[in-house]
Image (cartoon, rainbow, N blue to C red; front, top):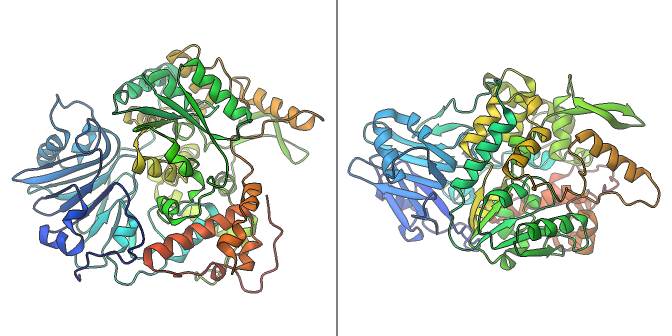
Length: 582
């Protein structure tokens, strides 16, 4: 591999925190990156790793150790299960020497581990749900890996666009499984580890449902998860909505200094969040929606890593108003604890699903994920010439969902569990966390090993909001004193009836939703002229699809070179105009 220490595109600002490594010695590493770009560089017999992070040596966060027989890096949020006060990186290196990859069972949290010992070689591993991505390439003479895909791609002399994952991103807002939009760059697979030449699966994430007190056990595990994360440094804030999930933080984290809510100042969502903050004695600040809300600049788009849409980074434009060191949030609670990807059906009436509701006994899996991931019919205008297959967008979706489920079907027996796994594996909202963790000490309470184990042991019919609410009341019997604006009752069916009636009745305003009217905001910001002035065909697409086009072209331009892919190239030539969808 040729020596290159300068970025291909020097105008792109490096992320604040980064792990970058190579299977090789220090001289190999120095040919690839300057050690001066990192706070610490450690080298073992087979792997050299650089770390840049403000969280080094903060208890429960990034830790490194270098010894005579090896080296270890723990990146992110890492809580030892039982280590008797030992340095966690030093402990893992020692345990790895005797137990190999199974030593990672000793840790809890959201992390990447790099451990290299003369007895077992080098290993790069994720936590059980791959809550932090690690990218790698074999484009040179040594395997290179890291948390920033742009920096890993920089080691590829001539990157090639991988069009099928790119189309997945445009159709569904996320590239599935472990591919990226570049053929030479991949991701460490789900619940797996990477070596110098191969990848291997753990068996940590396998559905094995059993009977127990689901709500009682969930409450105990939530409490312990909160206690583990209560003592993070500096001023502490919470991203607070009016819904269920973020209020869990209020019940279990002490000494919160601020609560932030993104939304319209006069919305019911902001009003309930303000009432919750008052209830728990926390100063509340509304981050008012304006032109900062929609993310179109490379500085924010990069947190989608080219495989996830940046729309989910709702807070991105308001970081300068969030004057705290540590930020908590309720992200992923709906996915892990409340059955977000569970298929619910009801009585078909006037083209609507009406009460009574139940788990769909025969779900159309592809249609279900098309709705959950934001598939848009207008994406049929996307070019089919980029891939070798002649298939529609819906055919493409069905094939890819089936292929991914087939790959992981050894981890579940029931389709409902497989659907939950598919949602966790391809969770499109991860850029929300990646942006927070690069700018703050970020803590996702839900990504606790005990809660993930609860998810795997609880049958899908009990992984629901009713069980979750019973658990919340065990944490604090006043936690639901101020109800979410769209959920005045515990019952899912009653809430749906209430919302249906409000929408149907004249002169009655229904729940406006937690987010602003993004279509209207897109038009107000005149983004067609700002980002697609030379692409009139793209301007005809729905706002969300246009933002995805901007995400991927901006990311590619900043990563592999300016104008690597023109937005107009993504459309079918001569396709009929499509009425924009709001």
